[in-house]
Length: 542
Image 1 (cartoon, one colour):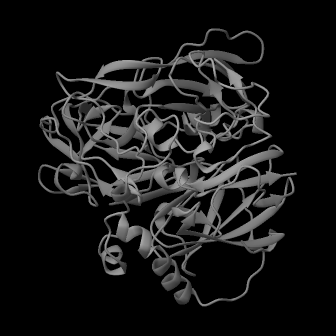
Image 2 (tube, rainbow, N blue to C red):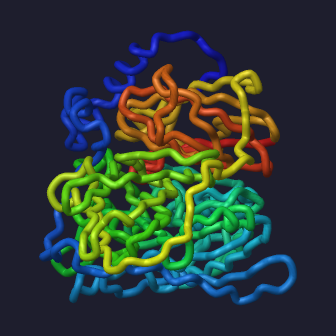
């Protein structure tokens, strides 16, 4: 990691980026640079389900329940969530064991208002420690879900000291790599997470973030949505109520007994982190779930709908396209990104989405005949993984919604000249702890090391370079994409983001201001298998 511009040739960096990963990606079932060029968004290996799968577009789209607060007194709202095992019907007629928030997948949605704090008490009734991260939240460090700030289950009498000065082996705090974190804050059974929500209205999501075991925990069901709203957005006249749909897209694979299949080295998720060698580059499933349902269908009016889309997959990338029965593509009008509304709408025919990215999109069914179907497909998928979901138009209806030409005027206007420093950060495969891993700046994650130290209020430009596809996420702050490969950003890079998709061999520049809170945060690849295998780093704001 360097803090200066040494003027290296970009094409050389691209070659080094791809070449440095070949040893790992070949072992993970990818071939080489030629294969990456043919399928630039395909990083990982696909599991095949052993249970019969239902036909597409038969299961109705479920909508996650909105969580009721246990208290709204004073200046804050308080919620309670229990993390517990549950048996859920995902495939019709088949029961699947999941780890859940309040017994459902996705977990319940939290509706919140800008500037009104929310405290969520999480109770851990699972057999392993957990951590909760509100992805995209501008959150104080003590509630951000640092990977070693564990909530220990009551069922483990050997769970170690709650002081955090000793970390027992077998609890997912890097024990598999011999690491300890003297700064960890460990609690038993419950923990209060407080979110000020002093941020732009947007779609956030919460998920498990335990060190070394984030990927399998999310795969087993530990993910849910949180929406932040404010009066200014409410006044825009965007589609609302039943015409606003949260859509959590995630792929999974199923074993013969109906359980989730995942290639963990330790299926108990207690002691040995990692996945079997063919899946080192990422785990892909052959079943596409939307809000926990396989290839669902949703009945709609011939009107505009607002789709709040999250890619909650571990490693799968999507390029979404909406196609009518007649083959005509419907416009996907983007109005928001990870961190809220754009300045103005951007119209797409295809919408690429990396893991953890969110897109706020308007789709208009007004010209679709009653009885017609619009299918959402993934242009990067094949076989059953190409279909995502469908909409069936069932009636004509009045529509007084609109898409304003100006959506927001509060986007930051950071300029390159505002930056106090430029950092170069590489995201590449490499060796770690005697095996293969994924590294940032040539180093695997170590909770005891400070990788980037910056001052509160500093503006920085980061130049990120990748070997294979890496969705890079910064905690606490949003950022703007300045360039890709020395050229202007792509249309889907618009707005304020917290996750950016790096393509193989590509260099991307982002700019951000480190404001809000001091403390220890993270930045990492949100390919969850890469994250668990070392591709995470510390960000200290002083």
